[in-house]
Length: 405
Image (cartoon, rainbow, N blue to C red):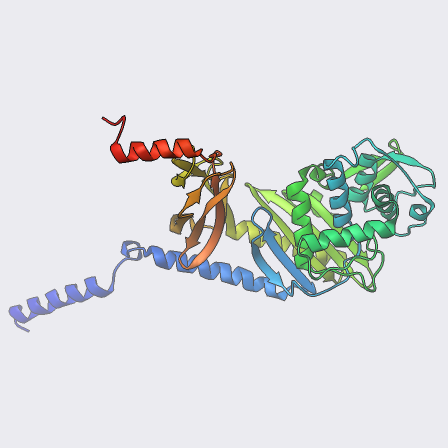
């Protein structure tokens, strides 16, 4: 081979090597490919949840109510003592509206005394405070204490059950029918994982004081003579667990509504119809792991942050500020923060009077084509309707530019 041909072959070989044998570290990183890979990983994680042994399951973000995963979440099933979430909710509402106080005395009735299952063995005529009775329900799942509280609020368990069903309708729980305050009734008494998550969310978000009890592993009752052990084992063994309620009957199987909080992310996982207790806790943990691993809460705006000014007709002020009435927090897949877009939609025409806090628009947050949040914008202050004389003066000023430089 001539020197000229050898040199040409050598140059061609070098070009070929540079084109096809490139060190891995030198390859450019495509951000979209990285995001796509992360999304695939999340899909795989979600797919792993499909082999749950629970008849029905769900996990959602308590702050927004957004569902992260669900399996037959509207199937009507027996829920056993998970029922007591609604009982505790009505008790907490009665405390908040002044019907009860934490120190109100509750006397055990003959009917409460006859409750079977888990109990603190109340005797007819025995008296404890609302807080003590609530502690027995929240930690020990005491049926007798639950009935005693219901009777204190409504006069009888039957009337209390009517209040439970009224509240269920108010919350939009379409798959639920209560027949007692405890969940001891199996036939005709039912709910769904979605509805259980709804009432769980209402309880912990509107009445967070209940978490002081549901997050306790152990406590005592009857002046320290009776030990209360939490039936929710996740309280002891799963980081961040702060509630909420277990349940079991032969028909319902093993049930659980579990709440846990990490890094400002409060999750609620519900499983119904589990084959055994260990599986109940393991699968609730699996749901919570999925939520904490794949999602995060991002604050997008502060409470009171001004979004824009809106013109006001016939008012004592010509415009009003539109603000967020609360913090704006979004539940996002991890890594999505930079992809969030916001569209502000304000009312075109406002005519006085305007009330402080009146809705004047909304902000819609999206990631691509997916809506991830919608928040109201309200008037920062009131704007009264101007008198005829004031309106006439403003019109004259406008026409003749009186007082302008």
